[in-house]
Length: 314
Image (cartoon, rainbow, N blue to C red; front, side, top):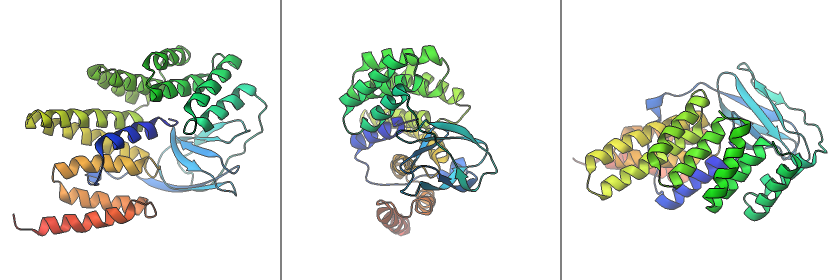
């Protein structure tokens, strides 16, 4: 999933000015979780089923406190090494070793350089993706990275061209499809975007947190527009849809860093719906999974505030 979910969340936070967290995580059920520790090269990025969980420390270790149960796909990448993707068996617990091999593949090194620049210098990242593609014209991941970079720059035409090149290589890839859905949404074609987000979920066999987040944001925007127009029935219906998809995204993200802000998005909706008991349950789940994040103190205060509000006379 790369940086796509981080981007889609960042835009939502900027647009909505989120101030509260609440929700009904219990409505989608708590997934069975396990803890693993990835042991590999230092400064290696780790994904599980395309969800980025973080970077290994100086000793090459990354503790992932909560990973969804079942067979998953583990992917590890470090600068100067060939990326490794392998199954993560359902029984995996504790240390999981991943051996990386040095690479001299210029296309792969250019791609790694581009990825490192995505949050630093977007234009340099675009140039590096293009260099990788000149060296390896059917480099799917480079087309995906390029499509995302163009999309973040607001260059929809080139984003779409890069995406189409990626889809010629892998026509049913869910990540490519979710980027297509984002482009459709950004172009104002919301109905087509909804269909395409749902197709990405189907292609991911139900597991596609970026698509679920995208749908949640789309319905949240629709709810706010309906409320602004005085159509409160439609506002409520759209908030219900938004909450449904964001709750699934939270379940699928487990303890991945991006889940922190998806909780905020879901919480904003349920606070509006005055589902205070569910909000408290969500806060407690949040604090259990993310006790050390900067938002934890605020979340604790939200629990206190909600309990006071619930105790007030009706």
